[in-house]
Structure formats: C-alpha cells, structure tokens
Amino acid sequence: MNAIENFGARTLDYVNEAGRMGLFLINTIINVFKPPYKIYPIIKQIHVIGSLSIFVIIFTGAFTGMVMSLQMYHTLSKYGSVSVLGSAVALSLIKELGPVLAALMVTGRAGSAMCAEIGVMRISEQIDALDCMAIDPHKYIVAPKFIAALISMPLLTALFDVVGIFGGYMVGVGLLGANEGSYFASMQADVEFSDIYMGVVKSLCFGLIIVTICSSKGYYVHLTKGGGFGAEGVSSVTTSAVVLSSVCILVFDYFITSVLL
Amino acid sequence: MKAKITGNPIVQLVDVHKSYGPHHILKGVNLDIMEGKTTVIVGGSGQGKSQVLKHVLGLTQPDRGKVLVNGQDINRIKKKDLKKIRTEFGVLFQNSALFDSMNVFDNVALPLRERTSHSEKEIRELVEEKLAMMDVSGSNDKFPAQISGGMKKRVGLARALVLNPKIVFFDEPTTGLDVKKSNEIYRVFYKTQTQLGYTAVIVSHDVPKIFKLADYVALLNNGIVQDCLTPEEFQLSNDPIIKQYVETAMGPLYSSEMEDEL
Ligand SMILES: Nc1ncnc2c1ncn2[C@@H]1O[C@H](COP(=O)(O)OP(=O)(O)OP(=O)(O)O)[C@@H](O)[C@H]1O
Ligand SMILES: [Mg+2]
Image (cartoon, rainbow over the protein chains, first blue to last red):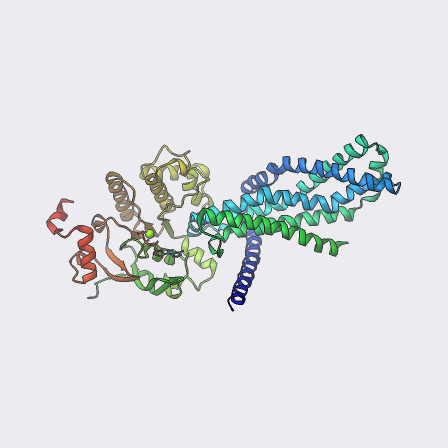
C-alpha cells in the first residue's frame, strides 16, 4: 500500500511541477510583451548567456567537427565517396549536433547559473521583496533572460556549426588529405535552406526549454518537495534543472526532427 | 474588555488560519489596522508575527479566513489589482532582503527606476536624501555583503520609504542596532510619519520603547491576537496573558515612574 501511495504522491508532484512550469512559461511570455521595454537588462543577459558561452562553444564546436570528420572520412572512404565529406559533416552539424550540443553546453554554463541565481533570490526573500514593491519578478528577472536566451541560442548554434565545419576541414582536408575543393563544393550543393531552418527552429526551442526549466526550478525552489532547504535546496534544484533540461533537449530533438523532416 | 479602537480600518485580518504540515501557526487571527495609525505587533519569538505580515502582503495565502486591504480580499482579487494595492506598500523584511547583486544605491533606486519615470538625476537626489535620512550616506557603492546587519536594516528602511508609501510594514526595524541608532530610526520614523501620515505596522521586540510610537499594540500569542489596545491600556491590562507579557518584557518592577526616565 505504501509503495502505491508513494508512487501516487510522486506522480502528483511531477504533474504539479509540470503544470507550474507551463504556467511559468505563459506568464513569462505575457510579461515579455508588457511594457515598459528596457534594453539594458536584455543586453546584460545576452552577455551572461551568450558572450560568456562563446569560448566553450568554439572549443566544443571545433572538436566535434574534427571528430565527425575523422569518423566520416573512414566510413566514407570504404565506399569511395570521400568527396561528400564536407556535406556529411556540415549536414550533421547544422541539423543535429550543432543545436543539440550547443544547447547542452549552454545548459551547463548558463542554465545552471540562472537556476541558482533565481533560487538564491527566492530563499533570501528577494523575490518576495520585488513582489511587495509591485515589481513583477517575471518581468524584472525572467523576461530579460528569456529574450536573451532566444537571441543567443541561434547565434551560438551558428557559431558552433561554423567552427565545427572548419574543424572538420582541418582534419579531413589538412590531416587526412581529402580534396579541398570538393569539401566545400559538396557542402554548397547539399545544404539547403530547410536544413538551416531546422537548425534554427531547434536552437530556438532548446533556448526556450533551457530558460523555462532552469528559471522555473529556481523560482519555485521553496515549493520543491524533498529537495531540502536553503543552500542545499538550491543546489538540488540546480542539479535537477540541468538534468531535466538536458533530457528534454534530447527528447524534443527527436520530435522536432520527426515533424520537420 | 474591548478596546476603544476608532477610525477606518485599512487592513483587516478575519479569522486567519495557517498550518505548515502538523504545525498550526495561526489559529484564527483577527486584527484591524487603522488608517493613519501606528500598530505595533509584539509577541514572543516564533509566535507568527512575520507570518501575519506575510499574509497581509499577500505573500502567503491563509488556509482559512480573509485578509482585506481597503476592503478587498487580497487573495480573491486579480493579480493586477493586488499589484495596484502593493504600489502603496513599503516593506522592510526581517532579514532586510536587499538585492545582493546590487550595490546600496541601486537597491534603493530600484523602486524609483522600475515604478516611476524620474530622470536619473532626480533618482540620485531622492536616493541620497533617503540614505542620508537613515544615516548611511557614503556606502553607495558597497554591496549588501559588505555592510553590517544594522546598515542593511537602514538601507532596507530607506528602500521601503523611497516611494513615500501609504502603508509601511516594518519587521523588526531596530533589531540589531545599537541604542543610539535605534533611537535615530525612531526619530526618523516619527518625523516621516507625522509628515507623510502613513499607516504603519511594526513588528518589534523593543518593548517598552516602541510603545511611545504606537497608537495600538497587538499581542500575538499562541496563534491568535490576544488583544489590540492602546499602549496605556495594554500596560495596565488585566488580561493574564498580556499582564504576563508586560511583566516579562519590562521586568516585574516596572512602574510608571520608570517610564518617565526612559
Ligand atoms: N515556511 C514555513 N514552513 C514551516 N513553518 C514555518 C514557515 N514559516 C514560518 N514557520 C513557523 O511559523 C512560526 C512563526 O514564524 P514567524 O517567523 O512568523 O515568527 P516570528 O513571530 O516572526 O518570530 P521572530 O520574532 O523570531 O521573528 C514558527 O514557529 C516557524 O517555525
Ligand atoms: Mg519574525
């Protein structure tokens, strides 16, 4: 009986939390469109979410492109089609690896920070203080992060793709000796607008997932059951926000792909 | 005995109950806060004074009962209307609740920046004025982590008063301040209150000094408001619980002669 009760209670908690997140997202979107519009907080958040992630994106992008090129070169050379190496690397980066890996990196770097920051504001009553000053915390704290994430994610993804393609070029052409002309020519011939479109849609969706999950987990740290209080509570919701965001990114990746293909 | 409370209640708590798990914290709180008056809530630690404030601010919802501000039940009205009511509030939290990633100046300037269309120059003047009033000028660039607890309180007070609120809620404004500073706060409070005529709700342990400011004193004990009386009535009350509180807070030998020396 206890096991069933436990299961029921847990399920209810999850449903509750999912509902909270949904409402949180709706509330945030409403606040994004509410005046007053202030640019400076958004720029600041773009700096935090976007600019500060550039280094890690370049680094991971380069190595991803390099290893893709290495793997594909060996596979393709079995079939004598090394000439399409460029398009193979580019397509897998643009459609799949770029958005997903960039989103995972941003989750780890900016998502966790976002969650912890909002969580600390909650437990130290700073969010209550905002409420009492009639300043909507959704408008003041969450909306700028939301807009900044939606602007930053596609740009970071594009950066990841470009760096990855050049990383692939270095290994495929520079190291393994594939033909330089065909690396870019095949890319030009095979990459279509719909591929880019898919990458952009994915990156936007992932940006949305990251902000929604990470912000709402931090925002509702006081309502989280069994997570502990204070610093421990914040650390446990941060962990779970990163895990949940990563899982959701991969799950939604599948569904977005299946819809857009 | 019922007190001779007169005036227009701006905040009313009606039979407010609140439990956390098995703990029944508020067991039917009834309290009227009169417009333009200073109501002081006293009571032992952990009796739920901060909880009462949180219910009035709409930060916590009661399990049962109503909280009326200007006659409106704040848990039933639209979010927009609650926000409107809160524009008239000035709040000092027990832990000050300063924004710890902003410096002192920006903390106090935030309500002005977000809620008014003052220019940056006007904001600077208003903030400096309030900070000077609280005697914390010269720490503008320090962050909350770099100032003392007493300074945080005073910055919190400056922030609460910067928009000239109609109702102020101070949770232990002078706890952690030395006698001189706390007297200074009381003086500032008295001055601004007579100037601006706001309604004040103060939670305090500073008995009997706080009685000089109070129009009404409410004792919160064991989850209910024992009674809400004028300070004179409160000190002379025959209610055993109030009597015991007064004796414990002021010492059994307390008499009106000693009050004159204070
Ligand atoms: N979120 C919460 N969850 C569980 N119990 C709580 C919560 N908040 C407050 N309490 C309990 O409610 C009671 C009243 O707390 P409150 O902070 O209102 O006391 P207080 O009268 O302000 O005390 P103090 O003078 O020390 O500030 C305490 O016993 C506390 O344990
Ligand atoms: Mg308290």
